[in-house]
Length: 239
Image 1 (cartoon, rainbow, N blue to C red):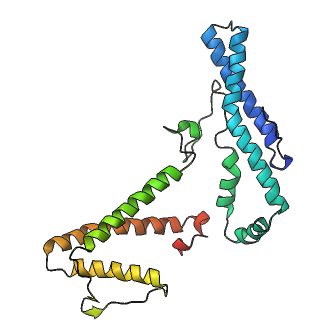
Image 2 (image 1 turned 90 degrees about the vertical axis):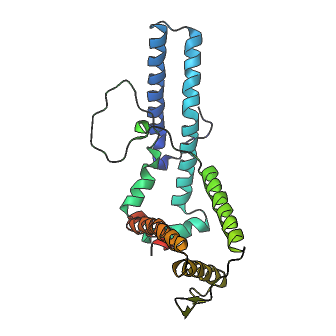
Image 3 (image 1 turned 90 degrees about the horizontal axis):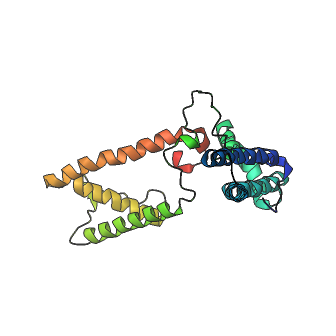
């Protein structure tokens, strides 16, 4: 099936063989049900091609992951040596188990054998209504472009006769927040815009800011909840 071999350290060689056997059983039972128990030589050849196709992508990924694991355990590069010295201070058992169990997700099972019913809070892959995206770069790029578009529209709107206030509730606006000029400028602009809406004489602007505040609250709530996830301790945004 593959020209490259598994590195023995992950123990995925035997596991992958068992997975291939499960995939073979599934396709064989399917074929026997379709042909009434009398498949032809051509049917059997086609079945083996289906097994090859269904297993190739996952087996190739497992081989690559096994080689990466071998390199990581051998500390072959300076970046791997740095990660091995730093990451253990931030990772906990939840994160380690999540990384270790990544190889189990997507493994085939024999579809014609009953599976014991056990309580689990996270659904198995075959219980999901649809498979997740293998690559999120398309959705991420779309989100980034959408946010950039909204920022451009907002900048154009604010530039049309909008006077950025120089004070907030009668007090001078703070100019320095983090000591980074670009960040301080953006934060000053945000405070100015909020100040203009909160203390504006128009009731419409005050209603708009009252609607917008719960939207910000949901983001803060998300960050707060995420900060209690043990695997997110290394993220500076949760500090």
